[in-house]
Figure 1: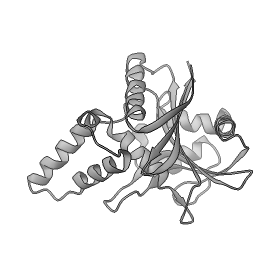
Figure 2: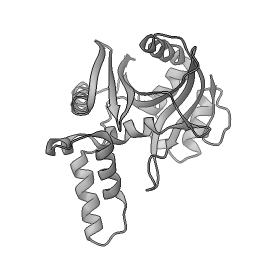
Figure 3: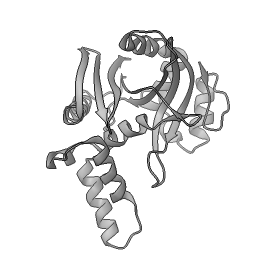
Length: 246
């Protein structure tokens, strides 16, 4: 698989990943051993992560998948309101039957899925009512409509990052073509910096979300959960997996 940065420059090793993706974009503070950015790069570059993910996806789809290209910090625009969803890694592949596959990777240690939807929406509406020019309320409303057929008040207690991670996976394009198969892959690296209490709560937040959207559980075991979701009248998969690094 060929790795490139957002400019198309080749990434050949973990040092390239750091300098071309994080140092060049002023995200150096996120690059720390034991934290998600570094651990994902190390997993893909040094720990055969590519083969592990490819096997999981191939087993899920019941046919071989070949990964062709990947871009760290891949931004996917899903509306007209500015900066899009940034996947920690965006992977493009092809199945033996020539179906195009996109895997949007979200890397975690014990970081949350950001604020609750209610908190994001209240802040956005407050700014709007105070005369601040913002499209944030419209973005949140449209994301809610795309994720849920019928809204319920309790959905506002869900985590905002999950709301745009699904849409940002479905709307990924390569040469202006969307994937035939879309997969959101959440990888939790249990390093020495992993907090068990935070990690359990993050997993609960994830399960609350997939139980609220139109979904069915495909597989569940100690280190991996797979769900098939129907978002915006399109099907996609969501995989939540753990990698023990302790």
